[in-house]
Image (cartoon, rainbow, N blue to C red; front, side, top):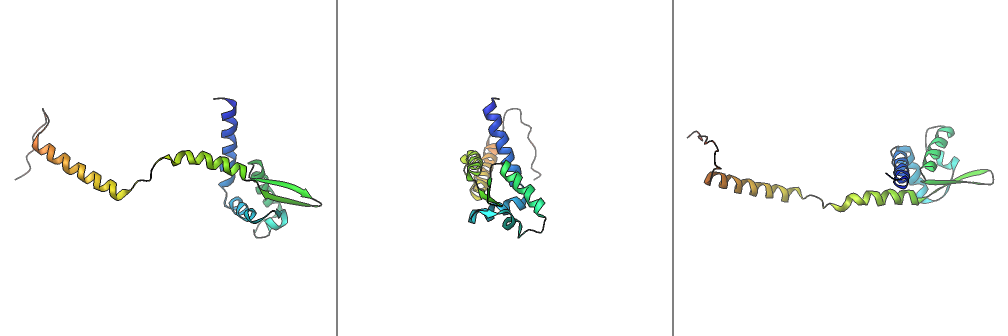
Length: 134
């Protein structure tokens, strides 16, 4: 594998690992609204500021948020590029049509009906005849 694919895969790994945590997903949802100070991000959660800072560090390392200092306050803002890359990767799996289970069931029933009629009419050579119990 080449280095570019490895780097892209490592970035996707970080994005999905960051998104795996419900607290981090909640933080991203909050940041959809607007940039927020770290203390404002921490407010709705029942955890320490240090714990929130760890979550923010993981989100920043994954490229999902950017942090900047404005005066004495550290601000967070959503950085959609990493999410866009993950979305593009996931869309590659969207090439398959959703399965209509009802139509599939009708198809199978029709195939099984056709198959049993064919099997009754012409057994394959060498096939053992099994009495039907009548």
